[in-house]
Length: 450
Image 1 (cartoon, rainbow, N blue to C red):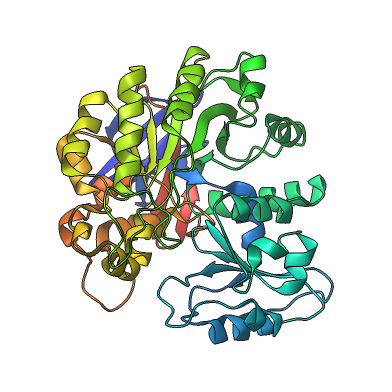
Image 2 (cartoon, rainbow, N blue to C red; image 1 turned 30 degrees about the vertical axis):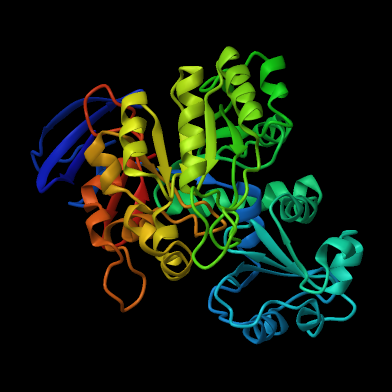
């Protein structure tokens, strides 16, 4: 029995049997041996981060933070000061070069080191800046050119290469990331990492399942699920389940590769479509035939239209990851089709300046959250770690405040209430018959219910 828990201003006792809530009663104030005393702390359903690149996040936690850098000199200064072992590549994350007055140059990053690879990932991981040593080591000299910038698939290849460390070391990093997430009240994540199911088989065997995981696959590896007869939600073992088919349909705003109906402000480009329409439909149909739900990355307004069209043609519901710019009429279509908007509130805050410059007046329908709820779209929240921290409280704050500095909230009409943000960050509720995935929030921080 959980005693003296605060739920929406009311003190309650919660009876739990075999991990299921079996009764909710007015608090008696009593306490018996074997009970858990919440001591008046707020009780909440355990939180989920619905969009995590877990290996990347596990590695990025120890890498240089480039978010404060507003030009190449600042990037160089941060990377020079970042502690390293003197042998490994020098790696940073959080690069935002879209608004720099002077474009990146590979020679500037060479100033960090002329003997070691230097790699600076953009905050959205859709681009990466490398120095000359890294360009040679990764065999991208011709692609890197004078700028040292690689985008989309070329950037993803660098990311995969950087993640190619020995499995024991990687698994240790993942375990540490899980422990840090659990300490913040996270009971589960949707992993959208470019991994194999065998990576999760190995971690399960090691007992690395501290939190629940839905392990998703990209097109190159989705056959693993098909061959094992795994449908979305099926157990792989431990606390790990089969997740989703993840497909990247377009790029990102910071690299000007998000796919748009109209060109970026002052430019001719409308971004890129990374997966052709016919191939996207084929992938979704094939996944549907095998019982796997599709989770399709779409940021630009045209990319979202393409994705919604695809779900409609196939006649199946699924998830849209990011859904950062969605035409109002497409919001209504999402609701009608039963689609889920998997949103990362921190992006609206972090991208506000670049969005204003590159999308102009179109920001009036960008980064919707409240609009989704008002239309009846299923809304779930995540971080996109390592793009933003795997921290549900940061996610909730960004969803409600819509600002991270002293400026007023950006498009406050799209802000959520705390209750709405928590509901969109949880898969369970505090009701009889629900799993007792509970956390207590009080003066001493967050305490998971064990």
